Image (tube, rainbow, N blue to C red; front, side, top):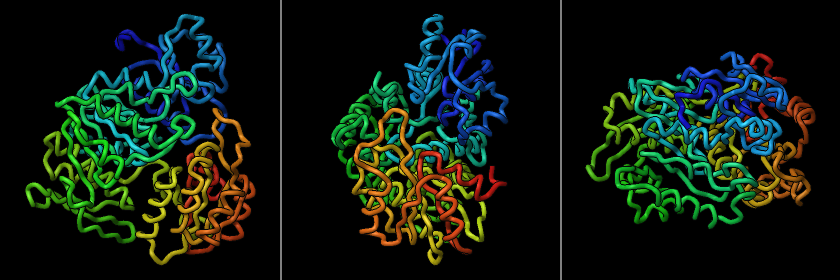
Length: 472
């Protein structure tokens, strides 16, 4: 499809973070944008409103009365089987999935992509910020509502050579096309932090997901570069023998670029990057985001810029300018004297990392972690790992599982069962239930001086409106 001939794009399920970012990208290209979605509150509501995006509530062929040139659909809300998408096909309006739409725009520039289980969004956001601060005029489509300080997470700039995006290993259209979204992408630079078992509705075993990444990596040619964390065992094994140039990083001394001198203070994260081949330190960084995982994210972003030939002082300024993005250890405000942070972590490894990051910044404070498990399939497949992942919290509360529309409930797993399992590792774990019950529990149990951390990929963020009305 020729992008130049497209005048009007309609997004079915536009509230998804990736969909919103892609819609804003097309908007910046000068296209007319319309969209539809359900009424439920979502993190992109304010972004869509601020950008005057024409949003219709509900799905149906009436939303296509303006006869768009292209319909792009989310994988949610029945995906390609959504009645609006079915109607578009009947009207002979071209239809693409989000993955296909992203692939379409990514071919117009040199693609820098991130992949792996955890770190994709933050690293992509750091790269976009670094390129913006280095006057590279980047374009980007990143699955998060906004990025501090550069703003909306979808942007097109005709002047720049690069586009930054996430390479997602989830299915293009679950049940219709289970190939991974990143199979449609051809990055010139790819960052991979970690590979772990996730999306058990698509990948039944860890071996299945490792094979998927291996096929992706094998696509890369000699002119492409893979920037890989040597600290992850699966990544370490899969990068052997690739045609692409491989640059490794990590705390392991065998890395091409070793992370050293890690220090944490309240509100500050400090570290240095050591070039093991040249035997010299290349940069010292101080960031306003926490955690060892963010040190890895920033190191990867730095190496992207270094490969592009940008000066170290510009890279340092760009990375240190990054202040975080929506739902990634985002400070929400104060509640009853407690400081509230929110994080999208939904995999056991991510939960461990965000709790370690919280403890590093707040070593003496009581950490109250409220978790909303995301999907029955993930909770069941990774049940024992979830049970062990909350050791870093002082108190743990579990909300009911937030189910995907693509799965059935009642698969032999529940938050009540998970609470019992977590108690084997953290005795102060409680079942909370729905939003109303969770709010009631918080009012009785949160104390002044606590760090209250809301965690999960569902709608747990809706608690914030009740806890801190001025946060929305």
